[in-house]
Image (cartoon, rainbow, N blue to C red; front, side):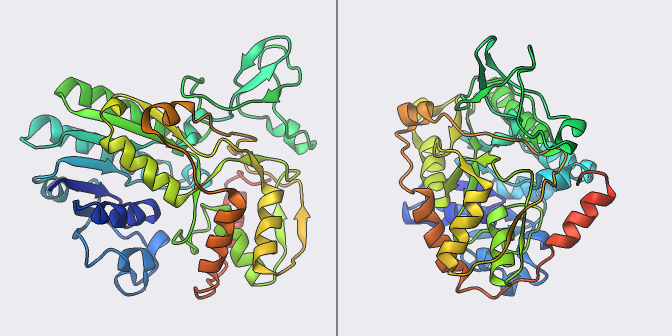
Length: 378
């Protein structure tokens, strides 16, 4: 029997992954601290993510930075899927130490244990993020493929939200971001994810353990946190719509993301863990389709059957990117990965699930005020 440890295994991606691995006959250990921001005040009783796995796994409640617990979790496991991380691009910009301590420090501790203690681990898979790219890949007619740096406050304040060529300043056209694209994260979260992936590939190769990493795009679906105001516009917008409150669409609403359904992410992750040729590779995991934020809000309203005012405000957050969508050619070639879910079909499943949940307290305005006080929301 294959044995797998999933750090952060009670989270959104982790809990879905647990259930699929158990179906495949794996023995699963989960290390998770059941963070209140994700799981609520009484996670053991009220977190649907934790409750979906608690009787199916060897569960260890604790922090990925706790050496004793991490050593315990690693006993007799063949595979490690390292998902434990603080999430939230905006929040990372003012809770810097927390994000670095957990995301980089926890990864370093994991690798330190694997390097210096006897273990049976064959492969480590780690979740990176599309955030490591910062802005995605663009094409300039004059300069060729380019990678714009973060947008300037003074430009966005004037309503100029699009990226420009970093070489000539001209107009650029968005193209799919490949794994060999320039890495230039524009947030503390993105920096942490970049370092996580680099550490895993570097150290695992040195100590003879296989490695693979995934640059997930915007993962969504049933089970994602509806209470965390720092991540997931689908959850944020859903709470607003179901409360019949208007939605503030940042910038001009044309900013885009690549939304990938949770089942597709789970399939890709398992393939990355099991396919021999995946060793040493980094994979973009998305759909290869760019969807605008305004389209997201409109699609949610359609499936909930509720119309609320959609205000395109021109507000913006420092550190946010304009566009990014994945080139998934490599994942198709090596992992046999092919997304099964369209955005509309996935949103239908998501909204049906949300309709069965209790309406959550809307903390969105408070989170924006917090960012405004830090000078990050304009």
